[in-house]
Length: 284
Image 1: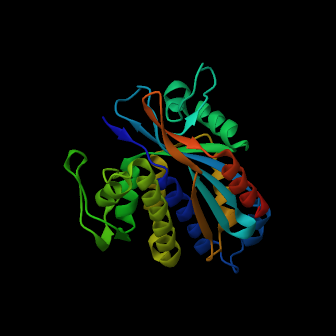
Image 2: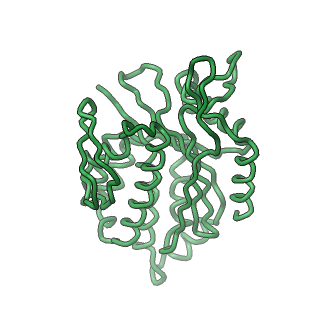
Image 3: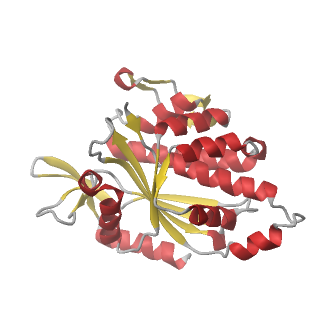
């Protein structure tokens, strides 16, 4: 069976867990003291991977990559999207390849080490989420309202969206974050995924009633693969619990498209990347 993975669902889960914790563990709850003692604020850097695995057990390339710098002390998350065509040297390879090759060669562990070498930052863990769970979570939320910026039509993938502000169900939301047939390629899709993450987080935090049902969290975790422990996930969610003003900043890894040896790559601007990471670190 075709299995599609997206990192967007990871943030749906994180936000749901965090807000649910906030709703259940209010200031008057007897567990508040215990929970606050357990969840000491700590920064975490998490690799979020979207993998297109078309057949069970076959090597799969990372379709989407985001690095989330979580800063619960300042109620913020900084997300850097790494284009899948980014040109990098993967450990064990004699020449540079596109970064999405790393997952096919060595799974999320090799992709994580490749990202660490690229950005020169340590990563605490990784997570992948199944598109099936993504669709079901969006449907359980009652859909997500977003301004579809243009006509999106690609019948081969079942994509058929009209422009304008509208509420997307799970299937249409999936189409929105996957669409890349507008001449902008992966960079245009990255921008839409960043926009969608913000729309989901805004909705989750403004409509608390949708997170009271355990079905949403259960459905999401069912389709999640991660090397983070349950304690890691609960601790991170608990650190954001009670916060209604979380800031999500999204960026695309600085660089430019370039043809090299007949292949199309995203070539990283190392100076601008260092500047971006320095700015994120200053706010941590």
